[in-house]
Length: 412
Length: 161
Image (tube, each protein chain N blue to C red):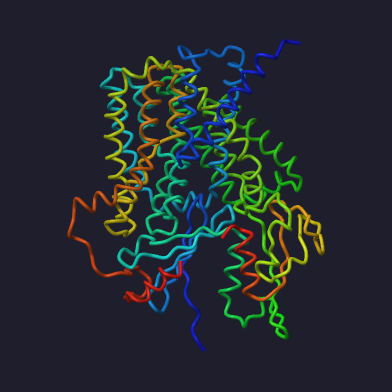
């Protein structure tokens, strides 16, 4: 029996510290992710107080954090939602990939990091943060807006694309040859296809097998199944995160709802541990040298995301103001950029500081861009505002009379 | 016989479902049914129909209360005692209430409003006829009997209006 006292003290301090930081973030209405990263930076290698005893536990917790992040992401979507979105929005998805992954890849190549790091950094700049964006949409009262389904659609495509991208990345990182990589990719594509097919056709059977009226049993079964599948996926070089994501997609209906409810607090805990772990393994001294690079990359990919949103909203028939809003909202990057960087850090340690700085900048800039892109764009392109209201396809155009809308405003 | 109003439905993946209603008078409303059970009701901007001018998030209980008011049904659901014009209201003690943790006497509700607090509901228990030294807690529900104005005044008083 080892002496676990230092472990308990360190772990308790970390989690308590995160709780206090999270409350602080809530107070100023910000995502707590950057604060968790900063906390990790402060306590890691070359930080203020090195943590020794709890390192192993935190590393394991971080793994579980990634698995739970992806599982809950999968639980939020039903297979039919994914397929519908893929059908209607795939051009936006392709534009998104071209506009936002390329700057990351180019940056890595310019820095002379080689092709594998280029693929990893491409992922970091590509994937928007569904967590931050969903929260921002709610906070700004835009869930009823016409561009909101477009924004969510782009996020869904990105999440689905992760299921293809992550296995590819892990294969490259494992140093597999192109042939080995293709085999892995084929396996994972086949698995993704099979799971989507099963979930569409027999989702109810899978859910019924897992379902339980007792929350405790449901928690154990879902968590056990997910971690096991994640482990097997890792064994097949497909990446544990993807395995967890697929389990989430395969579960549907009441089971998904119940599991989401039960696992959300666990996800919050372990995801926080994951962000701290990422910060711990990044040397704060390495950040200042890459700050300029991160800033340039952040600005470039802010512009490209706004372009992506503009394009996606235009395809959906949203008008000018809504197109700017779509673009601005999509700017935020967050948890998944860190997940991707976390996978790549083992092979290319220089990605860590850059990704940290990049995410810190964009997780703060993202909500601001969501709020201010449209007013700024309107200011810059003044004087071309259409005067007619209520122009929705499928509904008869009804001119709103000012007195009545004033009445509505007064009643709210 | 009026035609039924047409409500359009849009899926919001990962969030819930949105329902849009364009009224005869030309207003555009939408209700987002959030996966977490909230309802978000929004009024669209006549200047820019793609955007909402105002949005209010309703907790399930609030949505229920609002829907009762919106249902075009004679006032059966307003708990009217038609004979003596008294109403019975359930008033929850919310987070903003200054009286959570204080005694019933401290509220001086009867003196100030004329309405009576006839019972306190706490989780599964009911405490009928609470005495002035009864200590209220967050989450209690007061059962108030009085005139419509009196009951409203108690609600205002209890929740720090």
